Length: 215
Image 1 (cartoon, rainbow, N blue to C red):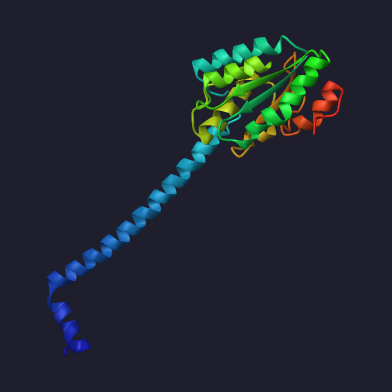
Image 2 (tube, rainbow, N blue to C red):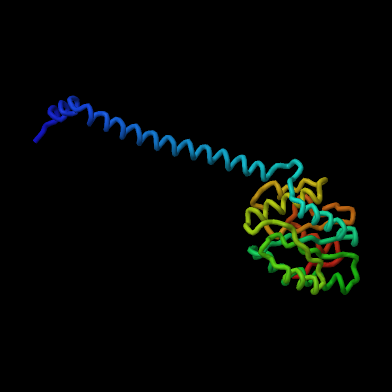
């Protein structure tokens, strides 16, 4: 059996073996350091990406959504107050359309209120046939180009609202975690009545309309 002294002597006399050990140790250290560097770079990239999504400057929207901003402007000008709902196909909040908004719509019609409900499909997975069905129910249904993934949906809703209502700074839109559906109560002059907290719309619905919100 080779003792410690003998093994040390063998190691010292075997340069080839020594170089191989050094190489293996260097490669292990290099790989570990490279992983750390890549993680740091990825972290910086994520931070920069989130910053870009949350930038409060002039939003960048495509030509198609610019057209939809103009369409929404025309719709808003047709009533004293407009209830706008940005919804997606994947969010359970879309169930509010049948559970709550249908009752709001019925009362608006029954009392001949100068108000309207605009449903904005903010998910490319929502079909034109769905929009047509909502129009037949008495809503004003339109869409924006928002992609077919949750992160894309949220970012494009943010940018669209900033482009459509540039005078407003909505606190909930400064975070990618804001809830969907996004509900806005706006006047003919494009003042958002539930700004800055866009999640209080159901609470002010009755106040704006002059009656209690449906349960």
